Image (cartoon, rainbow, N blue to C red; front, side, top):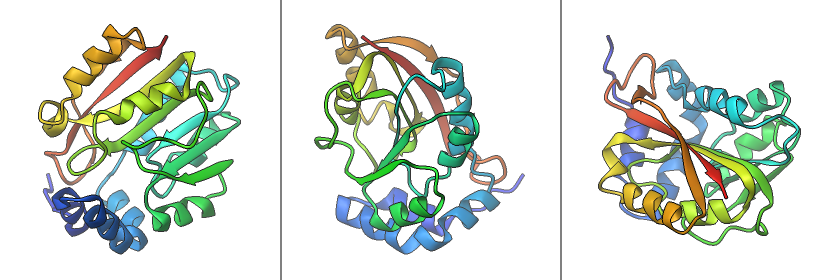
Length: 210
């Protein structure tokens, strides 16, 4: 099995600040899809299985939080989801997502900061490849829950290497203690790349918003 390492991925994971991360994605954006997909990157496609399991296509607007180049968008539309919106901090990535023609609205926003949507706007949110090294903090989940309707779902992956170090267990517990959400499903660890990068493992989490 190949263990080829991506230079673009390595630079992204090595970023120590928002500015470094923005620069890394800007430089990688034009090669992002080709390089990732040739390595068997599957997060944007696998996550749609959990979305379809819990959210009906007519439930209401759906947020792709950290949509990147928008790989999930066309597949969500193919599954019948009517209104799909996306956010990302990278203008270059959003420009590529726009070309896919699958998003009703794309917003430049940063997870971990206040988001530009009102309370209870979405029926649910999905997020893949975002809660990982050098990326969005666990506290981002508070804002994502705020903009999700009661009865909606949060469906997202967390990289194994950041779960403990990033304080995700504590944030999960706090959101539960505050009555904001309840746990529904926690997957086994699974590979983000089917071909290369065998050590990049994630777990999928599903929470129902109260």
